[in-house]
Length: 120
Image (tube, one colour):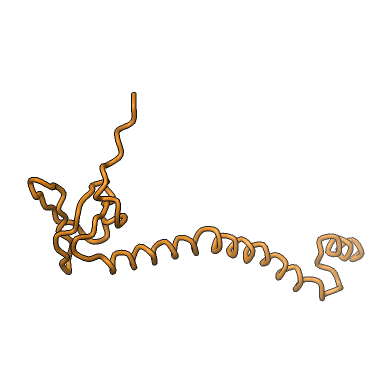
Protein backbone atom coordinates (compact mmCIF):
# COMPACT_ATOMS: atom_id res chain seq x y z
CA UNK A 1 0.00 0.00 0.00
CA UNK A 2 2.91 2.35 0.62
CA UNK A 3 4.53 1.48 -2.71
CA UNK A 4 2.59 4.15 -4.56
CA UNK A 5 3.69 6.83 -2.02
CA UNK A 6 7.36 5.86 -2.31
CA UNK A 7 7.25 5.83 -6.11
CA UNK A 8 5.53 9.27 -6.16
CA UNK A 9 8.19 10.73 -3.85
CA UNK A 10 10.98 9.34 -6.02
CA UNK A 11 9.37 10.75 -9.13
CA UNK A 12 9.27 14.21 -7.51
CA UNK A 13 12.93 14.03 -6.50
CA UNK A 14 12.38 13.47 -2.79
CA UNK A 15 13.72 9.97 -2.93
CA UNK A 16 16.34 8.04 -1.07
CA UNK A 17 19.65 9.16 -2.70
CA UNK A 18 20.37 12.28 -0.67
CA UNK A 19 23.70 13.70 -1.97
CA UNK A 20 22.48 15.25 -5.24
CA UNK A 21 20.55 18.23 -3.74
CA UNK A 22 23.50 20.42 -2.65
CA UNK A 23 25.12 20.66 -6.10
CA UNK A 24 21.89 21.96 -7.62
CA UNK A 25 21.89 24.94 -5.23
CA UNK A 26 25.37 26.05 -6.24
CA UNK A 27 24.61 25.59 -9.90
CA UNK A 28 21.49 27.71 -9.48
CA UNK A 29 23.59 30.51 -7.96
CA UNK A 30 26.16 30.51 -10.78
CA UNK A 31 23.98 32.42 -13.33
CA UNK A 32 23.33 35.19 -10.77
CA UNK A 33 27.04 35.59 -10.05
CA UNK A 34 27.78 35.60 -13.78
CA UNK A 35 25.11 38.28 -14.43
CA UNK A 36 26.50 40.46 -11.63
CA UNK A 37 30.02 40.16 -13.07
CA UNK A 38 28.78 41.17 -16.52
CA UNK A 39 26.87 44.16 -15.13
CA UNK A 40 29.90 45.21 -13.09
CA UNK A 41 32.34 45.19 -16.01
CA UNK A 42 29.95 46.63 -18.60
CA UNK A 43 28.00 49.21 -16.56
CA UNK A 44 29.23 49.92 -13.05
CA UNK A 45 33.01 50.06 -13.55
CA UNK A 46 33.00 52.39 -16.60
CA UNK A 47 30.58 54.73 -14.82
CA UNK A 48 32.86 54.84 -11.75
CA UNK A 49 35.88 55.63 -13.95
CA UNK A 50 34.00 58.45 -15.67
CA UNK A 51 32.88 59.92 -12.32
CA UNK A 52 36.44 59.76 -10.98
CA UNK A 53 37.80 61.55 -14.08
CA UNK A 54 35.12 64.27 -13.70
CA UNK A 55 36.00 64.77 -10.00
CA UNK A 56 39.70 65.09 -10.91
CA UNK A 57 38.86 67.60 -13.64
CA UNK A 58 36.82 69.68 -11.17
CA UNK A 59 39.64 69.60 -8.61
CA UNK A 60 42.15 70.82 -11.22
CA UNK A 61 40.13 73.86 -12.35
CA UNK A 62 41.94 77.18 -12.14
CA UNK A 63 41.23 80.81 -12.88
CA UNK A 64 41.27 81.60 -16.61
CA UNK A 65 40.30 78.10 -17.79
CA UNK A 66 37.85 77.97 -20.66
CA UNK A 67 34.95 75.67 -19.81
CA UNK A 68 31.63 74.41 -21.09
CA UNK A 69 28.76 73.91 -18.64
CA UNK A 70 26.30 71.04 -18.72
CA UNK A 71 23.74 73.53 -20.01
CA UNK A 72 25.95 74.35 -23.00
CA UNK A 73 27.21 77.75 -21.83
CA UNK A 74 30.72 78.61 -23.01
CA UNK A 75 32.77 80.77 -20.66
CA UNK A 76 36.00 81.49 -18.81
CA UNK A 77 36.50 81.01 -15.06
CA UNK A 78 36.82 84.39 -13.35
CA UNK A 79 36.92 83.15 -9.75
CA UNK A 80 36.78 79.86 -7.86
CA UNK A 81 35.08 79.77 -4.46
CA UNK A 82 34.31 76.95 -2.03
CA UNK A 83 30.64 76.92 -2.92
CA UNK A 84 30.91 77.49 -6.65
CA UNK A 85 32.51 79.17 -9.61
CA UNK A 86 32.10 82.66 -11.08
CA UNK A 87 31.98 82.18 -14.85
CA UNK A 88 32.58 85.04 -17.28
CA UNK A 89 30.38 84.50 -20.33
CA UNK A 90 30.58 87.80 -22.20
CA UNK A 91 33.80 89.09 -23.72
CA UNK A 92 32.85 92.75 -24.22
CA UNK A 93 30.23 93.14 -21.49
CA UNK A 94 32.02 90.98 -18.87
CA UNK A 95 28.81 89.19 -17.90
CA UNK A 96 29.40 86.89 -14.93
CA UNK A 97 27.27 84.06 -13.61
CA UNK A 98 27.68 81.94 -10.50
CA UNK A 99 27.58 78.15 -10.91
CA UNK A 100 28.05 75.10 -8.73
CA UNK A 101 31.28 73.27 -9.56
CA UNK A 102 29.40 70.12 -10.53
CA UNK A 103 27.82 71.85 -13.52
CA UNK A 104 31.12 72.21 -15.37
CA UNK A 105 31.04 69.62 -18.15
CA UNK A 106 34.46 70.00 -19.73
CA UNK A 107 37.55 72.17 -19.78
CA UNK A 108 38.78 73.71 -23.02
CA UNK A 109 36.91 74.65 -26.10
CA UNK A 110 35.26 77.69 -24.55
CA UNK A 111 37.50 80.04 -26.51
CA UNK A 112 35.98 78.61 -29.69
CA UNK A 113 32.68 79.60 -31.16
CA UNK A 114 29.71 77.44 -30.15
CA UNK A 115 28.57 75.02 -32.84
CA UNK A 116 26.13 76.49 -35.39
CA UNK A 117 22.44 75.61 -35.11
CA UNK A 118 21.28 72.74 -37.29
CA UNK A 119 20.07 73.65 -40.78
CA UNK A 120 16.37 73.33 -41.45
